[in-house]
Length: 594
Image (tube, rainbow, N blue to C red):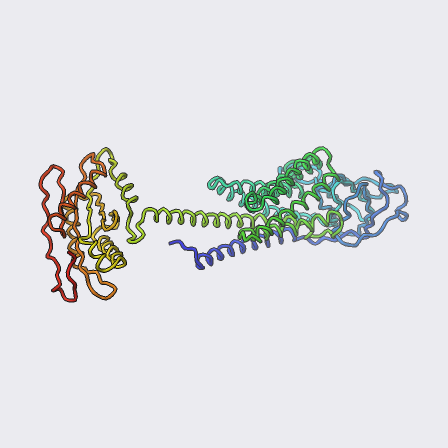
């Protein structure tokens, strides 16, 4: 049995806590899998050179101008227009070593080793892709056979943020397994949410789910490109094409997020001004897509940094305004978006070198996205639940108003409108045959004198008393209606004349045995006269009511307090033997009316 009280809210709260617990566990696995790194060491004596040419510098090693970089693995140099050269000194080691940059978006990376007084290029390591093909690694990985002095050239239109690792092949393999596990967890989470919400979209036909799916798939596409996963299945994919696909997915995801926000928060109705801003900003995504394909590089990066900041800000403003107007699901939306804002802000600031490059600034955006898409799914469920309750409340109110229009306000029985519509429906043939239907029309005897003697308030109580006795005399599904004044109608579907007369007589006798107790404590014995008619094939409801009414008045003329059946063939009505009249000699009673 449904409910909407504190118990139901408590159950809803427990369900959300379970969802959040699962989310927390999933994110812990994702974070651990992404953060776990094998034992690596940073190269010794790393310097950022002032040289910015296309070819290696010709000056001797000891005279190369530059500044020393911290002896850490992760570095963020911001966006640089010219090639960047790093002087790297590798310490002696046992066994083969690999020099690895973990940023797959760097356009041109080259490693040179000083041998015999000249800088010799070092080939990239050969790796096996997911398709089983062995080819030079798409990631900047170089096998360094001997320790010593190296030059590393990085030229890219993307932000120069990377981790430079000097590690063994076994350590690289462990790093790669942890990375792919983390990405697999993220993509598995996305796939599960996409399948779940696709089913809801098809069943509920709510456009909010469509825009939610667009946002989730756009975000996933962006991170697939950002982490270089497309190169695993498409090794020859140019980096510029990967960037264009990445920013296209980001534009689609951002536009979908804005449209989702508009629909989810009902902004077309509740906040049209901010809703128009969201729609206007969404059109700039098309500009971003055009830039990504025609002017890749710094213009695209700067545009999407500004565009992303605008989307994040507008989303927060819309959610806060919805929360202020007490739209409850906005709490989930604000919490979800705050997680993404925190991760995206750290990522953007690190892009320009304003924050150091480390785990949280690099993976925080993706972790925030995982939190957000999950919380948005819960927000959708909460919103659908809220709308369902509002719709059910509206339907209940409509049913209540409809019930009031069909119910007599004094007795709680059906009114004349209900009777007319019920008889019209009952008169229709079922499977080509007319349904059996009997009708009883009754009237309280001498009711006018009762009202004059006892007052109208007691008269109302008398009508309520009679209604209660009537309800006890019939089945729950048999309609009982107040026809008007002191007249009532029993509708008896499926009953023939004998059964209808029996029910009418049971009521008449029961009314006589149950006196009405007045406000002053006295008892009054009410009586009623009843006319019974059984519907004939093809007979309209008006004719049936008319025959019951004629039988009723025959009973009144015959002395009242009786049941009279109307025979359409013209035979004389045969009244049922009337019960003994109650009288003033009854203990504690008053004389009957009449």
